[in-house]
Every structure is written in C-alpha cells, then in structure tokens.
Image: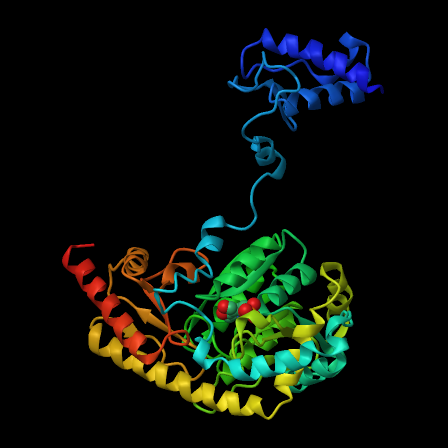
Amino acid sequence: MSNDRAGDIAEKLRQQAAAMDAGEKLPSVRTLSRAYGASPVTITAAITVLAEAGIVRPEPGRGTFVAPRTQSGGGTGALRETRDEPDYAWQSSTLGRTRVDPGRAGRFGSAGTAGHVQLSWGYLAPELQPFDELRTIGARCAKSHRAWTMAPPMGLPELREAFAAELGAHRDEVLVMPGGQQSLAFAMRTLADPGSTLITESPGYPGATIAAQAAGLNIAAVQADAEGIIPSQFADALERTRAKLVYLQPGCSNPTGAVLSPERREQVLALAKMHGAFIIEDDWARNMSLEGTTAPQLFTQEPDGHVVTIATLSKPAAPGLRVGAIAARGPAGERLRTARIADDMCVPALTQEIALALLSSAAWPRHLGRLRAGLLERRDAMVEEIRAAMPGTRVATVPASGIHLWVRLPEGADSTALAAAANAAGVMIGDGRQYFVDEPPAPFIRLSYSAASVPQIRAGVHRVAGLLESQASTGR
Ligand SMILES: Cc1ncc(COP(=O)(O)O)c(C=O)c1O
C-alpha cells in the first residue's frame, strides 16, 4: 500500500462525505475497495485519516458514518485540520458492557475530606497505626540493598514464613500479595472461569462483590445472620447454582461483626466437600480481636484444600503498606502461585522488608495490645452513644473483633438518604444498602469506630441521630 494512494482516496472520500448528511452511512469497505480499485487495507487507512480529522466516525461492527459537523472539522474541513475535543464515542461500542457496576465501585472506599468525621472508613486512625515503628523500620529497610532488588514472585522466604505461622499454613503454601483486595480479585479470577457463579454471604463486603464482577462471575447471595452464613440456604444455593467458589468472612464479618459458629463451620465445610467447592476465607480481622478470643481459621479446620485463606496487614498496621498473603493447598495453591507472575513480578521488595521487620519485631505484639485497647474503647463509646442517642435503632451484634457496627434503622427509614445527609453534614457513614448484593431486606447503616477518636465518634453519632430524627419527623 502506498501512503499517497490512501491519501488520494481519503481526499475523494472527504468530498463524498461532504455531500452527505451527518449520520449517513458510508459504503462498506468492500464496496469502496471495488469502487476505488484499492485493497481493503488502503481503504481502511483512508478512513482512518478521515476519522482522525473528525470527518467520519467508524463504529465497530456497524460501519462508518459521516460525523456531525463542527466549526473545527467535519465534512467540509481540510484533512489536516485538528479537532478541539477527542472523540471517544467509538470506545463505548468496542468495550461493550462494563463488568464492574460503577455505582457500587464509586461508593466503595470513599474517604470523604479531612474535615469529615470518618465513621465509614475501614482502616485505622493515624494514632492507632504503628506509625513511629513503621517510620523507623522503613528508614532502616530503605538503606538495605535487598529492598531495591527484585523479590521472588512468591515473596521473601522469611515473610512467607511469618505469614505461614500466622495463617497456620506451611511456608510453601503461602504467596505474599499486595493486600487483601488484590488477593480476593486474584483468587476469584484464578480459581473460577468467567460466567461461573460465586456464592457470597449477604450482607457482606462490597469489595468482594466488585472483585467478583471484575472476574466476570455471576453472584449468588446467601443470607447470613449473627452466626454467619445460614447452612440450609447455603446448601440450596450450591444445589441450585452449581457454584464452585464461595466467599466468606468466617472470623469476623464486615459489616455485621458476626463470627461463623463452630456448628456452622462443620456444616459449611461438609457442604463445600460434598459439592467440590472452594471457599475463599477473608480473614481480615485476625489481629483485631477485642475480647481476647479468636476463632480458628477455617483453613486450619480442613486438610483437603477446600479453603483458600487471605490475610492483610492493611487493617492491623497501615493501609498504605499494601502487604497481605494468600495460603492455599494442592493444585489450587500451585495454580495461584503459577498465575501470580502474570499480574506483576513481585510485591515491592521494600514494602516486604518493612512488613517482615514489623512482624518480627518486639514492637508488633506491643502494637497489637495498644490497638486492642484503643479499638475496645472506641467500640464501647460508639455502642453507648448509639443506644443513648438513637432510640429505635438496634446494634445487631456487639462485635468481639473488627471495627464495624451494623445498625438496624427503624422500619421505613431511608439509609441512602441518611448517608447522603450525614455526608453533607460532615460525617461519613456506610449506607447499609451497599453491603447487600441485591435489595436490602431492611434499612441498615454501618458505623466504623477505627478511624475516628472517641470525641469524634460521640459527636458524629449525635449528628447522625439528629438527621435520623429529622428524617422521621419530615416523613422522609
Ligand atoms: C472484609 C475486607 N476484606 C478485604 C479488604 C481489603 O483490604 P486491603 O486494604 O488489604 O486491600 C477490606 C477493606 O476494607 C475488607 O473490609
């Protein structure tokens, strides 16, 4: 193909388009190819020249159309003329439907502004993070050569070892990951085929819902109560959907704080075995036990590789660290470890070094002790304030670990309107609606006590209580 030939044809096509109306369809590439005695490649090149000049708009699968006329381009403009605005319209038809629901993803992880009282953020307030330790350790680690070389794709051996001890796994079963969210998305994508079904407890973690959407999975929600997922409904869902992948938070549910009870653990594992299913266990709250009792990982209760467990340091340490781990047994573990390198070469060595130094320092247990005291004080203040200031609401479970309270609003209350009003009034709260995969059965809000101080918690709950009261008095 000669460029001159494509240029000549482009000029002829420009004249042809100028005589047509905007939105009219140009003849097909095959017809033009015949008409101009040129190859389809040359015709396509000519059309590309016109498209770049904004004279025509190719729509993949439909044809090429005369573009709307603008002052700077359009049918009568010169070919070399440039347009003021890029035209991304073609992308919509090329991309097709979005997998991740933008509404759900947009609401997720909203941090508000520095002026907001943060009762919706699922991480620690700066004063609860091991900031001094991280600063000292970080400076020391940054001086080592190892921090600036490529780490092994599975992670630093010593850090794998440290996570293995934490997870009740063998070092070889552990894969160091850049945090919990990435671990979820990666496990879902690697252990299930697009178009298959993932079962998740509901209410549940919205980040798992969008991770499943990103992996192209269908989602079947199964009701959970104060003891976790309800086994009879779980059994029905496995039967009905033939799902082979399940997402659960057995140690502590975000948002409800529920812990999967010992009886249900047995039932859930038996069902997973019977149906040949994998359970992704999101063990995010492991180091945030408030009452001194920690449920065992489901992973340690089952030897045959049905459970893949995920840990993160974002919650008990600092969210910016972005270090976590997956442990998995058998061919699934092998598959995860093989697939890992397709995503990136490794978790940055510097952050792995920092995580390793933190976990193996004497400062870590000291930090966890301080953290527990700080969270306990905040949890109790929040529960007390809700009970005093928000009559008609109910704290579903006073959680024995974690950082969230799940609050049932009075019948008929509008959680979405309340969350929006609270946001406008300077308090971030979680609209319960987003924790359900489908429609919520009742109005809830999620209030988190980890990111605010006790005075902020008290003031924030009061402000929300006032808004709830005025919602009720104005008939919503
Ligand atoms: C239940 C749960 N799992 C996983 C994550 C992801 O955490 P990370 O910051 O480690 O990606 C979160 C964060 O909010 C969470 O609440």
